[in-house]
Length: 187
Image (spheres, rainbow, N blue to C red):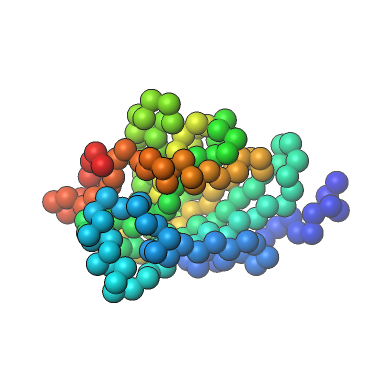
């Protein structure tokens, strides 16, 4: 069984979210249309620069039952208006699939939203923290620090990513800087 994998161990660079041989996804500001609550601030920032907001490198060694995939992410610091840089966020295609995030550097939060009830939770994510994302939960990462927020995400090989459901309805809450600190507010 072990010989079916080309490589079982991977070196990585957390700050650049690079894993040699992995599938790299980069998201620029222009690819997050509709994610930020302040559309005017979004358009103004986009006119200045189509900034790289985050990069994820995924390792997907196999797709069998019981296999795991993982990704190394780097979410860069910044804000659109007073809303922190964020990832698109997603549900899993296989809704029952859970995920674990392990913080490596920087600091921020994971916004978790139950798909059925809409109940939201904000969990800290940063160096030395772990966030468990239950199945049937939309999740989005936000960077509240002045350095890259880097993390590993580990998920079942059959989980898949459903970005479309989030694009249609977005998250019900946003994380903004208010009086110098992160504050969760209704969208």
